[in-house]
Structures are given as structure tokens and as C-alpha cells.
Length: 101
Image (cartoon, rainbow, N blue to C red; front, side, top):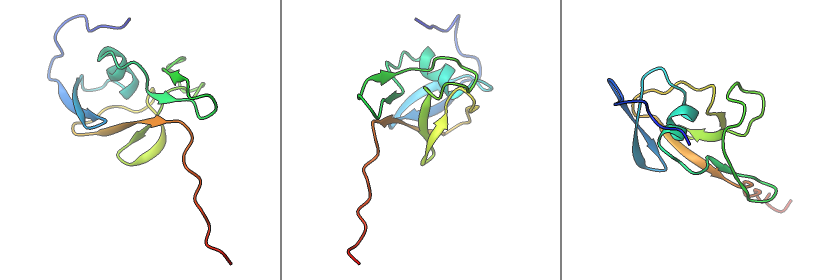
């Protein structure tokens, strides 16, 4: 699949689902996840099928992840920064119950 061509120079640390991964400054979150061999970045809300980045230019929305607590962020357009916390999105969000009126 994807692999680094050599050591990551001046690597920074991201946390994916609380696990550290090394990233190159200036890379996008999607690139770092692919380089690290992450098998999927989200599960489809319809079928639960695992999804990976597809277009890498922000058109397809297959790369959605939660970044620093904010859901539905496009990993292919988000540049990494040291200490960034990323979570994979696991299917459809739970519906909130409204209190009885």
C-alpha cells in the first residue's frame, strides 16, 4: 500500500485513537494515516463498511475523521500539527433523545 520512502525527518507525534503515530510536518492527516498503515479512517454510516481516503483533494468526503473533538473533518485537507488528537468515525452517530414536552 503506502510506505515512507525513508525515515521521517523532524517527525512530530499525532495521536490516533489514543495511539501515537509519527508524521512529517506539512503532511495531511490522511497521508500520515495511510503511511502508518491504518486499515480504515471511518465506517460508513449506512452499511458499516470501512472507508479510506479516495480522491485526496476534498471532493469525495471518504476521509472524514474527528480532529481535536470536532467530527466530520476532511483528513485529506487538514495539515498535521504536533499533539493533534484524531479519532476514526465509527458509523452513524447516535440520535439524541429530546425530553418529553
